[in-house]
Every structure is written in structure tokens, then in C-alpha cells.
Length: 363
Image (tube, rainbow, N blue to C red; front, top):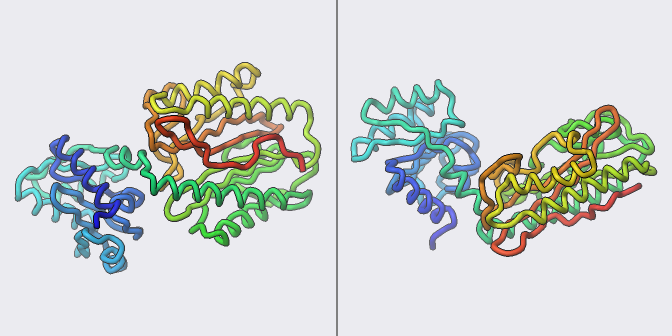
């Protein structure tokens, strides 16, 4: 029976043949998992026209054989880069010698070691994006897992909201969020959980501290879970106490921006158009200068992957893409508001995977 991993390798080989590449070196763990099922943390993958070889050290060779059927697992005898180069030298002796390497995932030293070991017959060319483009199109099985990951994040968000009360510290909430993720079946958080109280909520990526929660403060909770290798990502903003009219106005603007951006998500729309939909709403409320990051990003095996939903991006959304939509307003010294959902792109209407209510919450 053909596995999804084998189907992905076949699709990649088609791209390599069109680019006249005899092989592609893959050094990113998320990508070698996508192509083989191997979950080890050290190694390199070489995908060629007729075979796939995984080079790793003695800690992971048996694991590789179990997790990656149909893949040749080679225990490296030397440093990894040298072993990869030596393998490519043999491969190049059999025909075409143009090898693609991931320029954004290799150091200069690693590339130099590979080149030295491979010898003069191998011709090297930067070849980023091949696996990433494939990963951007989630198949039905991947989408099913991502729906479950989103539902898990919704459950954890509901539990976290019930814990918010004056006196509790940011670190306590973050610890409980990540504990609850694991209780519900996640292998861990997709990123360091963001919990920010009061004026710290104006920091888009605030790390939890021992700051205690005070009454009438804004709270931003941004969390994501890894379930069966796929990530979710959700943000909600609440007020512990009574929200001021100003805060209500900010929240209403962010909610409208989120709604407009989700409505713009469709196959064929550019990422820049989706970003512009959110910014136009915030500009109408004279809050666009407080929106300091992009509207969203791709989501999958990694929490940040293609496509990038940002100003001026020309890449078009395609069925199978899963992206976040996360407009925000961050007022220095006062606080911030962000609402984030995960959205799947289909040939028809887009699908919002995260379901936690988005109206302003006062606790």
C-alpha cells in the first residue's frame, strides 16, 4: 500500500525532474518528517530520482528504519555534512550531478564540508521551496488532524479563561495551559505560550512573567498545541473586570478586522489582499498605526510556514492552505488586543477551524 509519505516523495521527484536536479538535500526536521515519517532530531535526507536516503547517527538509525519504510537509512561514519557529501559523490558518478541544497537551512561551513566531500563532479544550486510548497497544500488527512488540533486549543482556552482572577500570575496560567494540552493528548505546545496582563499585553510576543493579574486589566492569551505532528494557534483577549469604552472600541475594531480578513480568504486571493482587508478596517477606526505585525501566516507541521499573509505579498492562496488570521492593536503603556483564528482554504468557502467565541469577554 502506498503511504502518504511515499506519495509526497513522488510529487517532489516530479519537481526535481522538471528542474533537472539529480537530488535534493533536505536538512529541516519538519520537512524530512513530511517526506518520510522520521521524527528523529538529527540527520539529513537525500531525495534522488529513484531513491531516498536518510543519513543519521547511531542514536536514530533503528528509529529511522521503523518510522520510515521505503527509505534507505545510513548510519553516518563521519560528520554529517561529510557523510552527505560522500554519498552524493557516489550518486553523481551514476549520471546527472546537479544537486539542490536548502540555502536557508545550511550554514556556510556545512555547505563547504559537503562540497569538499562530494568532489568536483557535483554541481550545487540553491533549491529552497520545493518541499515547503508541497507542505502548504494539506490533504484531507492532514486537514482532519488540524481540525482536531484546533478543537483541542479551543478546549484549553476555555479552561484557561476559568482560571483568570486577580492575583494569579502569568507564569501560572502559562503552565496550566501547557499542562492541559498534554492531558488532552497534545505532544506539547506549538510555541512558547503567550500570557500577558495589563500594559504588557501591548507586547505582541510577551513571554510570561511572575506579574500578578489586577482587576480591570486586559489579558492576552496566545496558545497553540501540537497534535499528531500538526499545530494549532489561537489568541483571545479578555478583561478581568469591567472594560472601558475605549477598550470596547478597540476590541470591536479588531473583531471587525478579523471578520473582514476571514471573508477575504478564498482560493485565488493574494495574501496581500487578505492583509489589506484587516488594515483597511483598522484604518477606518484610526487604529492602523497600532497594528504592528502581519495579519497571519501558514500553519501545519510548523507553527510558522508558507504562505505569509502580509502587506504586499503576491502569493495566491490555494485549496489546502491553512493560515492564521490575527489582527491586533497594541497601544504602548496601555495594553493590546489580538483575536486569532485558524482558517482552511477550500475551492469554495473557507473554513474557520478555531471556534472559541470572539465577542469581548469580561470576567
